[in-house]
Amino acid sequence: MGASPSAEENRNTLQKKDIAHLGDRVPFGDLELLQVYRVYHKLQDKLRGGNNVNVDGDGIGNNDQQPQATISSFLKDVGVLSAAESRVKKKKKNSSETTINETTVVKDEEAAFLEERLYLLEAVERKILPPGFGNTLYRTCFMLSQDTSEYDDDDNNNNNTRKESMTKNTNDDDEDEYTRMARLEKFFEGLANGTRRDRKTVTKCLIRCCTQRAAPVDDDEDGSAAAVPVSDFAYGGNRTNNNDDGKNNKAYIEPMELINLGYRVCIAAAFLKDSSEGGGDENENENDEEQKDFGRFLPPDESESGPGLLALSNSLAALATKRKQRRLRSNEPTDKLVELVDEDDVFEWVEQVAPMFGAILPTFLHCIFFPNKRAPPTRTSFDYPRISQESQVFPSNSSPMLFSFGCMSPALGGEVRAALL
Image (tube, rainbow, N blue to C red; front, side):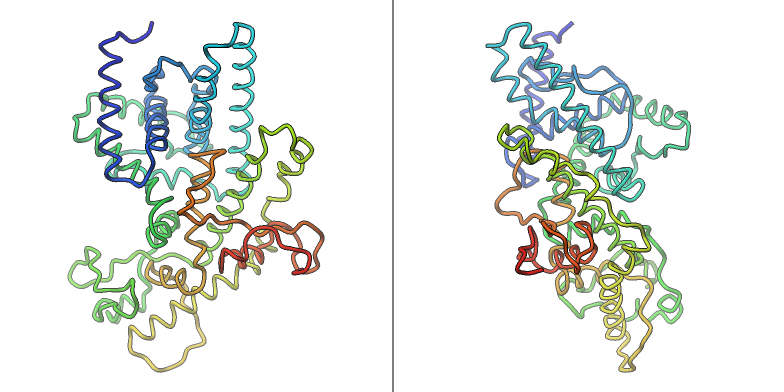
């Protein structure tokens, strides 16, 4: 039933070639490249409806306990696959010394672990993240623009469209080498852009997950935005964004949508980090229930979270308003804030007001792709501010006010000491 020696040898040779190629292009270590490479191929095999292929090159089948039958969502699929792959080394160390009974126990434990991981990711998507965020992230950042996402269907649709998409992708199994490498590079590029690149690149990934809107009417009518080069700050420059006939084709988003997205992704990352810490330490069993208390990570409803996030949203809109005045060379003060902002507005706001906003997505994606592993020391993670006792200032552990403080500086993250309350 296994692959022939020649097929296995060819697969190993291709794997080494691909990883060497990717190592020159994305900022990941060798072990990280290997893990993500295996996850990528298992994900592609699952999406195309084929039998799971062992790409480990070590003869160990590691798909036995993974729920591979159905396609759920990008975050759940890649999260479970990554969690399973991160435990392969533990199985390799014990495989030569375990008996049949012990092997059965290990498989049961593995199945329970992956099932728990799936439930955690499902809870994160249903209770914390905006609907469809993970699938949108996959489509906008991890896929070639001409490809069709298998995750485009929502829960209310039947599976006909999904099956057609899977059939279409299955027909691409004989893809040429250029297309195969282009898709592989795009997946790794999307992960690198969302985890290891600069703040501007990471923030752009979040911007692309928001609803893209046309330029405001006032900018479009007077033509001022296109007539005057944007060069009033470091990220401005004389950008060319495929403008036709001098028109402004920039994508615009609503400030509150971006802030709310960042807030929810931040809470999701905090929950995943907290649920992973101490999971295998017997000395911390007493803290497991507290660590995995899901309720304290639930964001408040919009009526409660809106006012707390409004200050950040207004600060972004205010900065965009001032940039617009500079762009139009207007000295007249205005009390009306812009309703839409472009990516340059967001980049400057992140640099000046909320530098830790650019660490939100990297922290979240690290929890998805590299669970139970510390982030590289060269990267600053977003450590959501935590309060260990009741406070009259912060009504809950998921208070938007805590998020606002955390966006300002890494020194304001982590546990808030009682003396500061």
